[in-house]
Length: 258
View 1 (cartoon, rainbow, N blue to C red):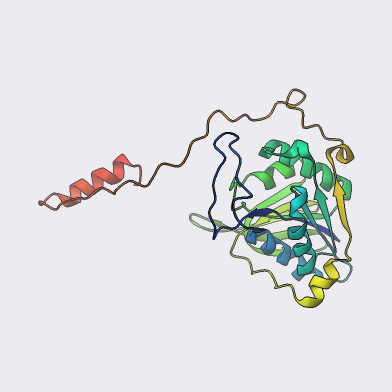
View 2 (cartoon, helix red, strand yellow):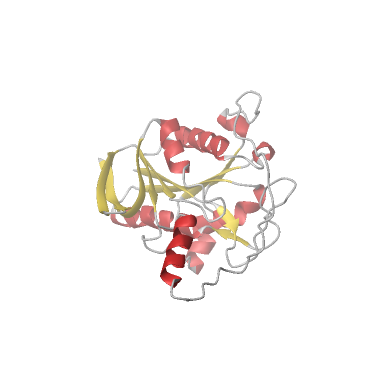
């Protein structure tokens, strides 16, 4: 079985994260960057299956600037057998539509049996990419899983819902996404770090994938405005004059909190 795992380099959540107010893009050079934790957990799901099933190949896939090579190597150090890094200047600022199209082309090219992703990244937090990939590929999907079981025939798992849990199954090939309920990734040891330097890392461009980023050829989403987050304002203070309960309920209703 071949498993592709989507990994992503993101600004460190412990540092400052800012937007460029002219371009609307994240200032990725403003602080440290790391491999997104949720994608490391997705990688752990694949590696845990590979540990128990000989012949399983785990491939890390990312679409990122050339500077993200170190993060891709971390995925290899954690345990991926190889990696695919999509690099192209035309992909700077790519929206979810273009990102899904490009990643789907790379997945089609590699022909895996299963694609595992995180449910949403910590930078964009769109949360729709797994479903978009499944649509492009014409595959089954099972998203936001809190537990996963992979077999030669398909994948099953548990999805949390408001009223309880749902048990879902999907035949292969499939796209699944996992939540933070899954286990933390294993820590890369010295042997893994050294081995990562020799593992295959294929770099692809849009031309290699036969995908066009020209918005005139394939209209995509546009940004209409971008603004700085307003400073936090003081909260509403309710003084109890015998009607505090009514005022609290009124506040909750006005802010659609009930």
